Length: 528
Image 1 (cartoon, helix red, strand yellow):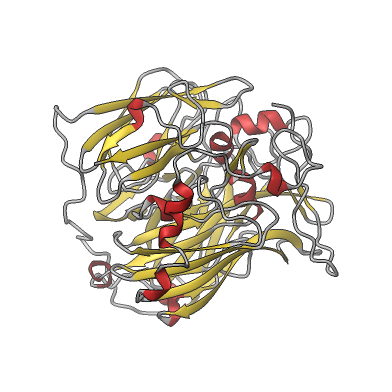
Image 2: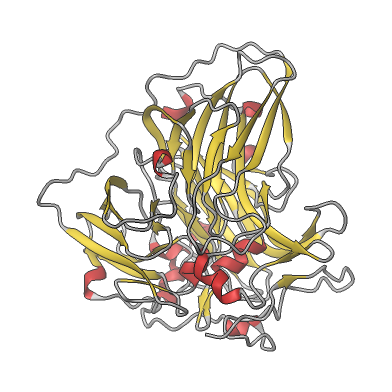
């Protein structure tokens, strides 16, 4: 695999609204049209026809509770002082549904916050106004495979796809982002980096009964890192170090929160809820408070914990979400509290950026601007309904070894991405509960994501010594429900999953986006 040509998002010609075409492929064929480079591989599954079963032809005749359009398109937006930067972004329009279904996330390029209620029937028209194939993956949601936004069902440039699904997940913070992959490699990293990502919140009666902070006391924070050059041009892979960047994962020179540089927010002296998404390509955050107070966790990827838990810090890997409570009732006017990403010791391949992995930096500062009195108290019980799959010594176990193929990407059990081709040991039975163990024998951490369901972390075990990626273990929140789990170098991590409701193909992969784009992704198949 040759070095990619430099990927630079240059300012848009305002008279032509030039698309981000010709940005280079993983094979260095930047002279060709991206659409030609990124045509979906023929996986031989006949999925294209199945994918249209829930599309515009049939679904409009069915009643829905929420109906909206979501388009992926090029745009310019101010990020740093000076010239606006060229980005790709999601824009949305509500057709039917509650007025708070779609709300902006700050003033940056992050996609709108989609707020849904459990039990709703949702229809979304997904429009591709880009110059290459894309998809929309509903990360963490339990939806049919043909709605999951997989690379085997691409949306071509200038085309759209309408999908519908029932909201059947617990209340929590989820998100949506692209998942395209072509014969020359994946484009998840680039398209997400260009700006295609947004948060999605599900609400339900259990959560509403807790009277948790909302309105101005609820903050949705999307953490991303980016690099800029020239006239505020976003830069991605390119140059002499591009191969090494693909191996370790992209690290930007500065962090953005909701698409803008970190800022100070003026708040009242009351409890607040911070719902945080790690939307970075590969960066792991070590979330801590500047005054060393414990971090109080309400929930994880799959919603609320049984009860609040306190940690010295929280380790948040790419794609993971965390739900935090912070009580500012005792603060004085003018006091400040900063959420930081604290120091940790990263590996030898963690450099290559002015903000290397393990560096300490500020994320958001809360400044007490007004005295407010409230009656909200941290609940002692959040959601104690059983959420963990039942496992026993007889529960079948599958092992997935996570390895590096030096200069040839990454692999799972020696295999790399092959479209929707599945091996015999990647076929599971509908209704079964299994234990999957991820064994990381590589030098890099791997946040492993399983599509189509939420799982429980059973345990983790150190199986090999590692001098690096230290200082993160005490912040691993393994309780609750998850769709992404971090496997550090030299670790075996076991998760319990139950395959319910839907037959078909789903992905499992590392959510270091450069790793998944370079082979560390596979399909598994659910059969009755």
